[in-house]
Length: 475
Image (tube, rainbow, N blue to C red; front, side, top):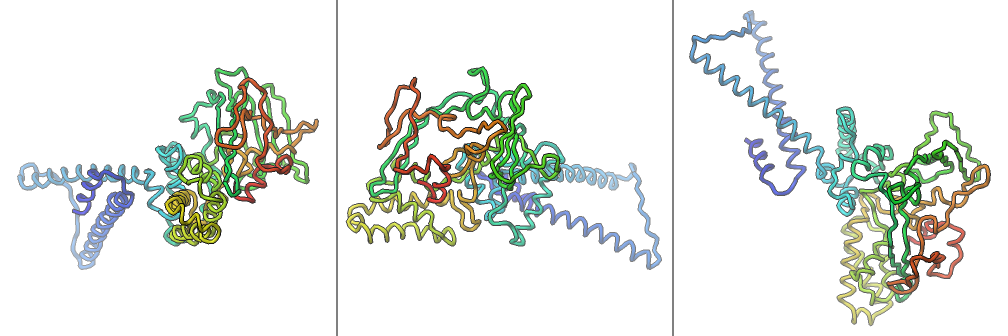
């Protein structure tokens, strides 16, 4: 009765609920299955007991077409058997469907998978099911995933899972995942991008950069691979060796062009790759080496605040709002509730102490800024799982993480002294930059501008962007 009731609920409910599916198609059928096992065990016990008492026990199967009562019972038995087989098949299908659902992956194990589930809903792949990327095709891949899932379930039950959950570096190849939707040969073109950064001064001064971003590729608009997608386009093969699990430390790169000419670039130092050692993994560069978190990106605090200031969600009339917003957002909170209390309290305390007149003039703006910062925190910071953007590096770009500079560090050179370039115009052409929210546009046919740092510092010419911005937790 409970099973029938929950099946009706599952079919008529407007929203997906992983717990209802688990109870309906896994827990209750397991109880029914246990009942069948106990029933068969009871028969076995009775047969053994009867034989011990000297009774003859014999099972016979015969059809008595001349006995109307027997035939009615036989047809009832056969009908119920057909119904039983159909119900078992239906339960198996629905159990398979339930355990493959995005809500099951993200919500059933709420705390461990909350960062991934929330980040997925904020990403461009929000409508892509988890299994389409994480589980390969075929029975073997499915069984491997379910066995691994049982291990994860045990970890949840015993509260022994990692915090943060380990990133699955060994995913299916980009050809099996990304290229189901994205066409490698048509990843070409140039995009105009405008990015506004806000400084940490009293006025949170905006600095805008307009640039052309060369996507490149080997599509119909280009004769040869170019731009950022050159790495995975055409006949060129790019390979590398990483010395860490997160694939951030890359001392060795090999490029094989379409003619089979090989060039090896290495970082100066003591690292000597053992190419014939089976423990040395030479990875072929593909989409996932840059787009390593395409469905689960966690946005850096600085970028979130810049965007919120640019679109007006955080009022820019508040003095030092960029600086204090960074501080309260990156403060250490024990859990989500503590953050919800600490963020508005931090803003209030700062303005009462440093700008008491602002507290009187902009109470609604301060409250609005606190609400926006709480929203930013909720989708990017997960203290229970010790996870945020500082733990989950995203290899796109090079401002908050090393990203491109893992290889393009200006140090890796081949035997002829040729260096893997880290010049800005290798991937983007700056056509406007300056104070304000618009930048200063140039003629698109021009050669572009040399990057001008909004602060009067020279280190940006000598160090990677992330080496400073990671220390400052952004700009």
